[in-house]
Amino acid sequence: MNGQVIPTLGEILRKQEPISSHLPVAEVVEIFQKNPSLLALPIITESTFTGIISRRALFYTHLGRPFAMELFGKKPIISLGEKECVTMDTNLDVNQALSRLLEFDPALETDCFVVTETQRYKGMVSVSDLMMTISMTQASLVRQLESLSERIRDEVKKAGEIQQALLPLADFRFNGVTVSGEITTSSEIGGDYFDYFQLDQDRIGLLVGDVSGHGVQSGMVTTAAKASLHCLIAQGVDTPAGLLFGMNNAVLATARQTLLMTCLIAVIDTKNCRLTFANAGHNFPYLHRSSSGLLMMLDGVSGFPLGFEENNQYGECSTSFLPGDSVLLYSDGIVECTDLTGEEFGYDRLATAIAENIAMEPAVLRRILRQEATRFTGSASFPDDVTLLIASSTDKGAMHGA
Image 1 (cartoon, rainbow, N blue to C red):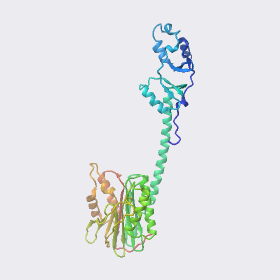
Image 2: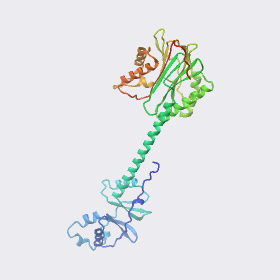
Image 3: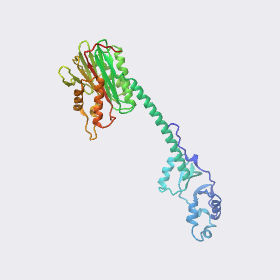
Image 4: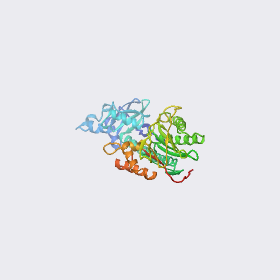
């Protein structure tokens, strides 16, 4: 964590003066009695650390028996000292120290331990001080994590708002074609993307894309895709295959094959009543023929997702798009959402819902389709982004959009 420094034993030790190994036990008892908070005393022999004597061992183990003082009082303290005691280096941080202490004493019955530097006695650390320091350090860490989490949440929220701002208006009309689109995201930053764009006075383009995954990286890919799309259009690229070709290289440069993006682009020519499309691994669109009432899946062409390989070429298909006809582009989030038993909404239910409500305006139809999927899942949210983009040709007068 940025700014989080874990204290070392050298920062929390207490400098306790050692006692001579020759000091009589009776005098050591007096030292402990004068200082009730004293847990242990280090013992040295000719300036060399040789062990400790703890309050607990002295009073409860050695002097707890009858006549013990008469027996031990005049003996040197080294005779009762603990030669095998916990010793740690000053440079150990408190977390490392606790780990080593637990290896030596899993029950944590030790009251304190000796701290040394280059094998020279420096002081002592009580286990209670060690635990208190660890607790304070963790509390500080939690506060930093909470602050960081709040900042991340705020940044993710802003990123989601920016991503939503990049989407076009939900509803649009152009030369007798009514367009309506929406994305229902499953997280703050979605991996789906839809767009529509005017190529000239007679043609309008439709696009739906789906990046593998969610989150900030997916959002970056969709942003790169949108930027490259409009850059290509400004350069005069006006075919679905040509646009996919350019966008593919842009996505590859952004994601470096870590993420892929399926994408379908359709161009409606209102003058010649034609629909031309190219597909980069995306779900096949549905076309409804007003004259026959036939609902068909346009599965005549497909290719690799964007970002799969450099300079990938895409094929195109073209079909008539007469007054009254409708085309539906969507992402797999709607067909793959499941009910409580794990059954998918699926293509059949989607096709049935389209056929039963195709007479509705595109904006109404997309709301009905989303509601049908929500009713099926029993949840107001989806596990994956759900995108719907519908365009219908009408007999009404031409209405140009920007």
